[in-house]
Every structure is written in C-alpha cells, then in structure tokens.
Length: 164
Image (cartoon, rainbow, N blue to C red):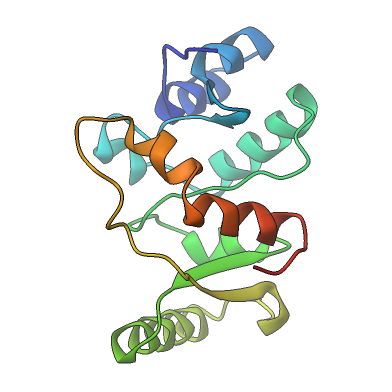
C-alpha cells in the first residue's frame, strides 16, 4: 500500500461520516508488513482532535481492519489526552536510562494525577530502550532503518510478549 492521505484526512472523513474501508486504505502505508497512517499533516489539526474523534477512530479501526494491535503516537499537545489514555488497555512509555528520563516519567505521572485520570499503574509499561540511533543515517529510508534495527526487534518482542 502507498497511502495518499494522513490521520487528519481520516479524522475529517470520520467527522463527516464519509470514511469507509476505501478511505482507510488510502490513508494506510505499508513497509515490510508494518502498516501505518502518517500523523496529521497540519499540526494545528492536532489541537482539534478530541476524545470523540479518538473514540470514532478506534471504533472505525475495529470495524474496518483486522489488526490485533494498534499503536498511536500522537506526540504531545492533545486536548483531553488523559481521557484518551483512560480508554487504553496498555500504555507504553519508551524511555532511556538516566535522570532526565526519570524526570519525564515523574512529570507524566504528575500530569495524570493533576488531570485525575483513571489510569491504573498496571497500564503503564515503562520500557527502557536498549538502543541508540547511531546507526540510523540520512540518505536512506529512516523508517525502514528503525523497523529493522535493534529498536524494531525490541518493539516486536514487546508486542509479542517476549523479552529482549
């Protein structure tokens, strides 16, 4: 598959009740059996993405695809983000070792507490990434390089319940 659209187009289609399997396939890209929808092409649309959009998106993906696992990477800046997290069965927090990353996790925990999010600590999976991106280089397909690097191996092992 070689998609023509991004997540923003799909969300707009869902809002207007025009999204169907054909539209989903136009948003979906494929790389070595990894299917993905690129993020919002217009970052300003990310701020308009609310809980209702998230619920519609998840229900749509459940009806229109047969994926066992869906991973969302919304970055930051989402309104109602804590409410979206409450609907997740697992939340993966990729970090590296060190004080800076410990501070990030503490900040994230404080955010969840401040928002009174109903996120159980069992849902949070702190994953210490065992890789560096030193071998990733420009001039090549960066996503492909990540997919088949030690990082990709580690993510696949986590998703299948294995340990790296």
